Each structure stands twice: as C-alpha cells, then as structure tokens.
Amino acid sequence: MKDIKIKRALLSVSDKTGLAELGHALAARDIELVSTGGTAKTLREAGLKVRDISELTGFPEMMDGRIKTLHPKVHGGLLAVRDNSDHAAAMKMHDIGAIDLVVVNLYPFAQTVANQADRDEIIENIDIGGPSMVRSAAKNHDYVTIITDPSDYDSLIAEMEETDGATSHAFRRICAAKAYAVTAAYDGMIASWFAFADQGEMFPESLNFGAKLGDTLRYGENPHQHAAFYLPAGPSASGIGQAEQLQGKELSYNNYNDADAALELVSEFAGGPPTVVIVKHANPCGVASGDTLIEAYRAALECDSVSAFGGIVAVNQPLDGQTAEAITAVFTEVVVAPAADDTAREIFARKKNLRLLITGDLPDARRPGLMMKNIAGGYLLQSRDNGFVADADLKVVTKRQPTAQEMADCRFAWTVAKHVKSNAIVYAKDWATAGIGAGQMNRRDSARIAAAKAQEAAETYGWDAPKTKGSAVASDAFFPFADGLMAAAEAGATAVIQPGGSMRDDEVIEAADSAGLAMVFTGMRHFRH
Image 1: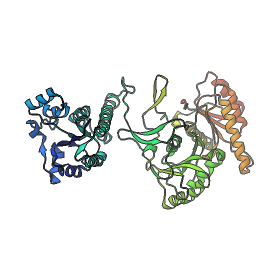
Image 2: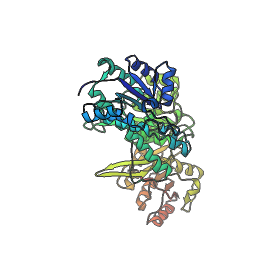
Image 3: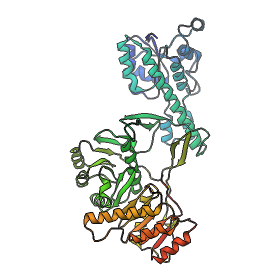
Image 4: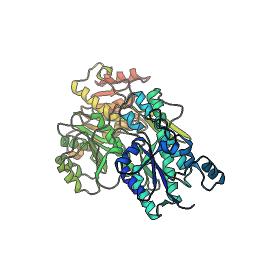
C-alpha cells in the first residue's frame, strides 16, 4: 500500500494536551483543520484557522453536542475506499470530501465515575460520536490515519516529516490496532459500570476486562516463560502498579507478585503502629509492629532471618535512615513504603540493584473487587477476601478466657494468617510473628514447621526458649483433628484463634481445655491457595 498524503484533518478531543502544538504542525503543511466545539475553540485561541464541523456537514451541532459528527459527510469521508469507482462516484454525487487524518480522544467516562459524579453526568460522558469516528477511520486505515492518544502526536509529526506530509501503511496499521484497543477498553469500562455499579451485579453475563501494557518483563516465573505487566484501562486504587520506582533494576514477574503480597499484608496495618512485613515467594516470613520502624523490622527479621534473604520488605510508615541501614544490611530485592526521607533514600542509593517503590497511600485492605484465576478452558472469579472479624464476632469456646495480651496476639496472628498460603499456621507473641508454617497439605505439619523455624531462630539469636513459648497461634481454617492443636501446644502456644466449624469441634475444644489453652472461634476462614 502507498503512502497517503494528509490534506484534511478532523480533530475532536476531550484531552487538549498538545493540541495547539499538533494544530500548528498540521497547519504548517497547509492541512485543512476541521473541528468541533471546545477543540475548535482551543485551536482558534492558538491562532489557527479552523473549519467548524457544522460547515462541513451543512448541519448544526445540536442536542447539547450529542449530534455533531454522526453524519454521512463525516463517515463517508472516512469510510470511502478511494480506489473504488463506485465509492468515488458517491462521494462526488453527494459532495463528500475525503478526510485523511482523524485525531480523537474520548469523553472521560472513567474519570467521571472515579469522581463519583451522579448518574446523569456519567451517562452524558458516554461518548458516541468519538468511538464511531475512531472505528470508521481505523477500519479504513488503508487510506485514513487515526490518532487516539496525545502521546502519539510526536510520532505522527515525525512520520509526516519522513514522508513529506504523508503517512505509511505500516504506521496506519499500528494506529488502527491501537484505536480498536481504545474503543474496546472504553466500551468495556461502560459495560462494567452498568453491570457492577448501576445494576449491582457481582457476576454479569458477559465480563469485560480492559488493560494497558505497563511493561514487558524479562521473563515470567521461570526464564522460559514470557511475561508482561498490564495496568487497568481506567483509574485504579493505589498499589504496586501505581508505585513510583525510585531506583534499582527493573521489576521481574516474581518481584511484582511478591511486592503485591507484601503491600496487601502491610495495608492491614494502615493507620496502626509502625509495622514491617517481610515476604518471600508471596508468603510472609516475618511480621511485627513496634514503637518504631527499626524496632518492628528487627522483630520481623528475627522470625525467619534465613527466608528473609533475597526477600521483599514492606512498611506502613515513611522509611527513616536507621531502618534503611538495617534493611540494606540484609540482601533485599524490593522495599515498598508509602514514603522515604532523604537519609533513607541516600542509604538505599548505595545498593544500586535494590528496587525502592514509593506507594503514597496504602490500598484499602477492605476494598471490594474481583479476583481472577485462569484454569484450563475458562476462568474462576471470586470477590476479594476483604473479610474482617470484629471483636464482637469472636467467641471464646474454652473454659479458660484469654488474657488481654493473648487476645491481642490472637488478633495479630489472625491478620497475618489471612495472607499465608494454606494450610496456614502463625504463632505470634508481643505483636510479632514467632513462627509461620505455609502451604502444607495438612495443618499439623504447618504447626510443626512453624515451631521448628521458631526453634531455629532461638538457636540463632541465643534465646533461652523459642518465642512460641507463651504465644498465640492462628489457623486459617478449622482444625479437623486435635493433632494440629496439640502440635501448637507442644510448641508452647497458650492461646488459639481459628474459624471453628469442624465436625470435631467438640473434640478439639476438649483437647484445648485439657491442655489449659484459651481458644477463640472467628466464624470466618481465610483459605489462600
């Protein structure tokens, strides 16, 4: 296919970024500018000569701008196959001029929803004419160039400089592909709003998912796998994807996954005392709260210093220099924080490969949302595990009541267990994890593994006894038999928090009473596979 000289351009944009500069670049090549409403006003204010769309169509803009570009003289000029004699004859008969370039970006539907506008305003921000022009231009990309993103203006100008005011077929194909992705994502956002927000459906008949490439990654979980990171097409809550990377190598697939796990857990402690989470392979290996961040970091590290090597550290408060020094003393892949002071940044800068991610706000741990998992031949969807157990929901089922400290440790352990792969067992004492058992096929083995890690920590640091002595233990799901509970008791736990609901609850409660344990039922489980 040949290069197509641009003689007439139609511009109709919601986002005016770079519009005046683009208009001047087109006008410098004697390209006729046709435009609508606010776009035409911006171009004129920039000193450019603009032809109103109503002059082109012979029909006024009406109905508050709802009707302006939906006209045969617009879509005929876009869709006509220039080399087709019948099309050419129709254009001549109806006085339809060719349109060679369309520059359109759509009404800010997603931003309007994010701003919590009322329903009428949201409906008015559903663009009709814009997507219609985009699709017409993209379909006829053999002859028409479609630009949908202000970030592509420079590429368009550079392309025209190389081809003396024309565009190549290869360039137009790229633009067309991007244009259809834009309209698909836009319609998907609208469909999602109607389904989830307007109709209140959790699982609509058709699920639309729009995303934009954020980065192509070196590889996936393993070097032979390909991987990329995508961002939601519309506005989204703060998270790893929105974090600012201040330094370090590019993030890998596993970095993203592990950093997200660390951020999700530390967000449970947003607004609380200084808290540090250390994650390895998407599982926490140490979590602690303290009076200061450095105190919390040291306590978290003590839980499992072996696993912490090459791990991810997330904190719920701005990083200071003293904590940064401690973190950099251990090989760490990624550090995630809402902020970092100048001293901390200087210290991290000495470790060129360490990635430092600044998130600003922490995500809301109780936010709604859907989670998706691919399986062979389909997808599984479920709502986020944003379940929360209030004090009033807790039920003491043993003869002995937990002490205030035991109850505090139970709550802490329960929060952490929610983020540990099942079967999950977490020992906690004095607002710090003492041992974590994850991903085992039975709960007894998780309890024993967690206890073994605590024993190893005691030997490493020269403690008289492991911190599981006098600890509280959390189980993400009920104990189906008393053996897991007895393993925790043998490790020194004195209090237990678990969902309850087993056929053998009476047997487990009796075992707890016999061992002198205090046990609390939550009525809610937190499986994480």
